[in-house]
Image 1 (tube, rainbow, N blue to C red):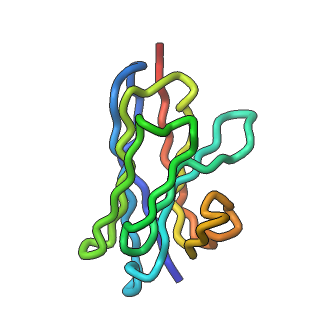
Image 2 (tube, rainbow, N blue to C red):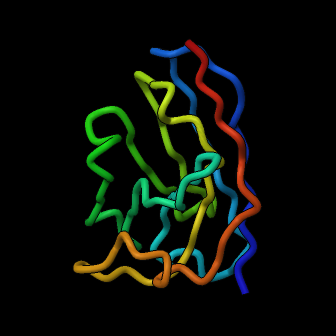
Length: 125
């Protein structure tokens, strides 16, 4: 069982930055691929970013590529999502996820059985 707790969300102006953090409660953190998904009001949940267990593989959704970075610290059981140049369309609840990395389906929610409660990110004009 893995418990995930996100933090760092909030209200930011367009063009600004936020860093989301995710703390994982598990002794085997380094065996899980980690990622972030988001869901905006009235929209389907979508993949944002994923990072493999040793950080060798990192993927981003096209919509955030070049603006977001993901990093993990296996010694601290933490994963971070640095969000820069935020846009109105980045407004959503962001979820930290843990699961198994697959090179051909890293963006599928089915590969991540563990989800945090989510943290709200609101980008204003």
